[in-house]
Image 1 (cartoon, one colour):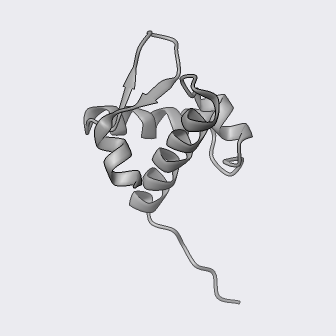
Image 2 (cartoon, helix red, strand yellow; image 1 turned 180 degrees about the vertical axis):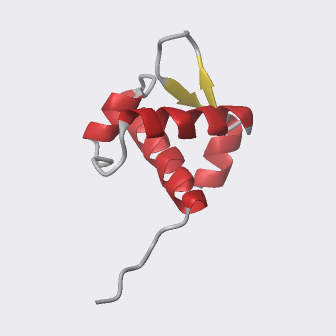
Length: 81
């Protein structure tokens, strides 16, 4: 049986696009638990938070409060479109 492996970069991109989707739907910052419940059950909340951190460092997400969810930046919207 052949199993396709998704690269780490693709997972990070999928998390970013999922975060943007959720933010567009709700208008609220997206936490790791919210994203996990929205179709990312295969990733742990800790893994999602790690990806969020990378995406923040790259300028795609921002965190408005220390324990709050993430919000997409203009850079994230440009890549999403």
